[in-house]
Image 1 (cartoon, rainbow, N blue to C red):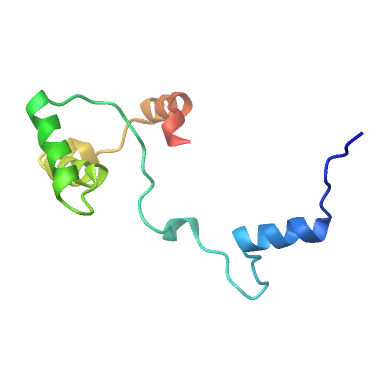
Image 2 (cartoon, rainbow, N blue to C red):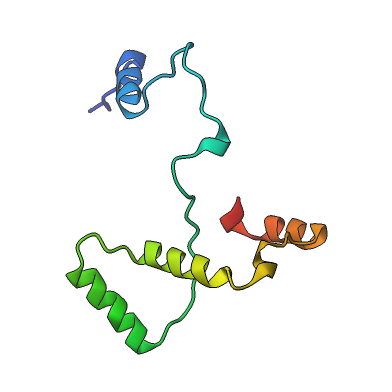
Length: 105
């Protein structure tokens, strides 16, 4: 009869420490407002076949090309033309969006 190996708390703590170092009591906890970069949310859209081929060609030929960063940049630039994009949603619409969208949780 074989038994499963068991690991003591010291082994697990050591592994966890390597993965996520313990926070020192003297270290301040980072503010959620000071995050390291954007939080990415995936969404589905469509582009023409020609645009898709250009994206794939750029991915192949340009070292470090990231489609999501190009998409983000293009959308931000285009949204600057729409002042309504900066206008907050009405409270009921915002509440519904936050309640129904898994992407915003």
